[in-house]
Length: 285
Image (tube, rainbow, N blue to C red; front, side, top):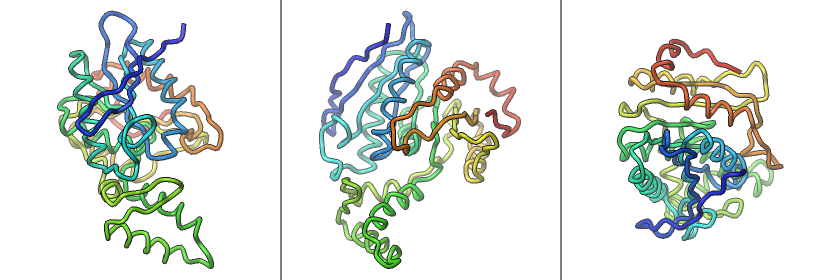
């Protein structure tokens, strides 16, 4: 029988946030998992995969909380009023709420920009584990990519640079800019641009999963460097490349079944066994 989540609104200091709670099968949860969704349309494209993964984790004994950040999905507020720090505060509040329900290990599960938010929130949540799906090591390229959507739409005669500079000047002056139906505030743009996967020594382990349909895929140099930094900080890290589409950017809603299986398997591996294996950056495809 398919697991159905309990839907409710969590009253945060910033307003009600829409949540779906998947309770673990079994009397004692193996872990408490908070899903932090990605940025703008990537969130909508990822909803099905997030729900499928939540159900798989639930069956494996984990309780999973999915919630919509300020101005996203069914949560209160307008996207144009949301700031990066406000999203971090939302994530911390949801994590604390989840921790209060059980003493089981806390996992923060991010997708793309959600990984950046998870790391920021982890600073305030104490010992926890991190699950990264296709993480962006820093927010600056993501912001650049988002601004280019506007530049591409308005570009005439190779004026992309001029348009990009104009957008940045508007944001610097405190004005929101409209891009692909989203009003991007200065507080959101600045926070995203400065966010990075900076190592946190109190994080116990990081499961880092990338997707590719190429059999010869490898991690980017930036990802390799970021992973090395986390390991130097003493964090146990499990990197793996899994076969599947980049479902957060495909035209049609797509699934990546191998990612779901790899996520459950990685999280279920005892951390001592991971330490024994974590001597190189060899990837499994």
